[in-house]
Image (tube, one colour):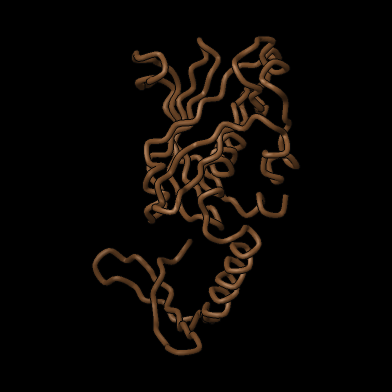
Length: 231
């Protein structure tokens, strides 16, 4: 859970009515569309588009902007589908992990055994077989995750864990250590700002608006500013 807390997911736009093309159905669909900005400590910055199809009971999570790099570039436009399970309050996703070969070409592998599910997914998400989640049979023994139908942040997190973290060339432990070092450097680089109200008031000779005069000091420089006086 410590790792997941360092993934920052923020909704930046919500469209109550929009449209998208569903590749699996080969047709245009209408519904809600949400955009999220994500800062992942391990892989970098992302932009996601979520298409909510309430009529069919499914949500599409699409990566529309990925971090730089030959591996992540291949995920741009990649879509993960979450669909209604037997429990209508929960959506399932068939776990498929992205993998890169020696030439950095990315492919996906569907997980058929519980032991092949990454530990971080097993520890933080509900896991079932496809048959348990849907009540239907399918070729192979697919393993799925379950998330609440409205928990879009969890869906985005699963996209990262299944498609992006598996392509990272450093471990989550190394990524977190590097992230914490960068945050400490940012804190150290922030200068202490000291702002003093001088008590002087400037009045515009034309309109009569009054301004307070401030003396501002940091560790390396000195400046002054005026601010409109509140009456």
